[in-house]
Image (cartoon, rainbow over the protein chains, first blue to last red):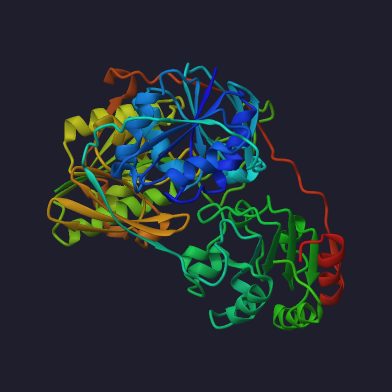
Length: 317
Length: 249
């Protein structure tokens, strides 16, 4: 057995979710080879070679791979996959984009979003947005797996000295073209990876009132989320939606304000480490998942919350 | 232009799922079922292209038990022209589904195939990409905006860092994000009209593709329950707990 892990990077730096995937891979087998496919991505290979859990770095450098188009990347992975038992990547928009292509070309059934490795062929993965966990066993000889990053600790990054092997690019099919990437330039952290998320629900009563949430988000360096009800009511754009049909978040702290706690919302946040609920309805289902519940009118509680935060000498960032 | 839209029948997103007592699967008996939410966006986008004269025909396809036909019927009520229902009483993995869809694509020869980006039951997020690979077609996954430009289509994709724009050749696969559009409701007259639109029925077994599952479902269980929390009396107490007890701020 040996593992081919696909590194996510921006041609200069390794993306941290790759480190979580490496930890997961190390629980399958110790022979981990990492593919760095990119353009002028020399620096990334050095970073990967220094990760003690990595045994070998495969480096394929070509303009073909500059933007990680799955149409170009998948044939390369398939070509070098022969000697590997497992092909592993992160279950984020990077891994989700190309891995099923690899899996289809290899005629193997992919196992998505693995949160626990039971054995080299048995895995735990959430279904129904985390409302159930399924244990699955794969009978494919070669397994394509994506790893939910938040379920594994990042691998240590220093002290290793893996060999770096150059590999040849594969002819690209030339059916897709990268145009541009617009990174979200919000001052606030991204909803999916923020350490703290504060969300508002229908109880906010208007989009204007979200300024109360925003002020606290700025103070805590938190991302702003919302329930589907708040999005449907037009208070906030739908890229803020947390829930089964929106984003699934697992921050250290999740603050639900004026959110009753519909199933569809709970599915998107109940794995958060610490949950706070502020709601004036003491019977709201959100309290059943909250570590700290405050039964209060949010229009009084939020300004007080900001005042209390302002009194603190230090706030973790 | 001809568009194929693949739709899936799933447990309605508002239903609290129940796990069977023997832990073999999630219970779907007597549970409200609906079209997978992003599949509604897929239908909507196809209908919009037809309304602007860019698409001539929309074919909606589903794979599943007899009742899965309801999702095709709904697509017809919203604006699809005809339907295909591939019958299968048992669960088929995304790999098998993609193989079946490939057969349909080879027969129907669409210029575009729309699918939802992910089904909210098994959460696999695979079918569209697999179908694209099997056909050697390009893919625009997690699409929140598409614009047709002659022989290519420009797709704006929702990625972790923000937005990515790509240009892909036709024919192509598009998997739809919820942000792509606002799905419409079918009007009563259109629901009545949809009843007269044709749905072709085929059996998954008769298509000559390998749909044998490779993954065995050993167990389905409840996620670990959260420990019961406490109610705090004031905002000051809350902030103090967060700072000193939970140590998260």
